[in-house]
Image 1 (cartoon, rainbow, N blue to C red):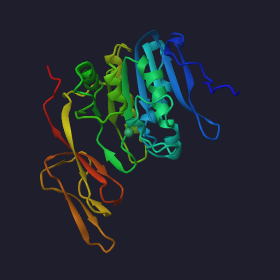
Image 2 (image 1 turned 135 degrees about the horizontal axis):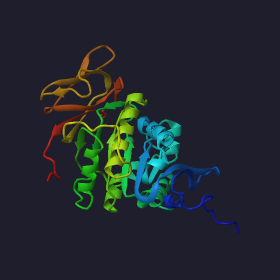
Image 3 (image 1 turned 90 degrees about the vertical axis):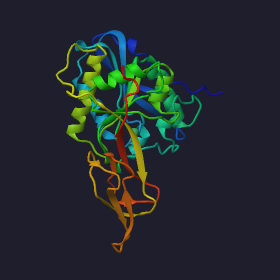
Image 4 (image 1 turned 180 degrees about the vertical axis):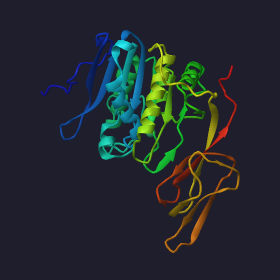
Length: 332
Ligand SMILES: [Zn+2]
């Protein structure tokens, strides 16, 4: 009888990394059809003491590059001798989606960020979520999920958190504000979103959107590293940071998404970050004869938070996200 498949790496524990050192792990997730092993890389920067333990997760969607590259740079830049606690970085949480240059893994077509806390005997993405949730997140005191918009869109930098869980809302909001985000979005999250399920398990956290369009910029990587360094200062992991916070308090917003009912060639009329009023023409959708098939109109006033940048649209494609200011639900 063949021996059962077993992880070829020891069970991950950031506390096993000696204080003042760094160590990279390659966690065994699942044995695939061709006999190869799905693995995920985890990098630990071990400062003094085991806590706070901060988990930084990027690449849950494989085509969101600023977070992935910011964690690659932080792995080179963070000195364990300057840190209290542990920084646990997963620079690319969804390696097969990354390899395909796609949002989802081609192995099963599942959205990893709708799959947490995962299944130990499920499909590859479900086993990956289970590994990340049980081996990494459950050992963390705070979780920062670093996203960007998928390749077809551009977005203003913002962060969101689970505001309707009293056990984690205050710690999550305070960390988001201290990290220097100028826009904090509230709203419900679908079951299976990593930071939502972490919150349900009692772990505070936040999920951000920075950059998009299937690319990375030095500006956005610096922005992301600034958020992380200020978060570490807020959690008491570094004595000080040179990355100053914005002077103004963050805007708290809710969102409204706008879709195209027709397909065609897209002509944008607005830019990301622009304020619009109700009735503004946001885009026109044409056919190949130059005839406008549809005008996309702002249904309400607000700020353009996201635009589709692809030149084509299919019926039902998301075209815009608009933010509107709301009362802070966790204000004192
Ligand atoms: Zn994402």
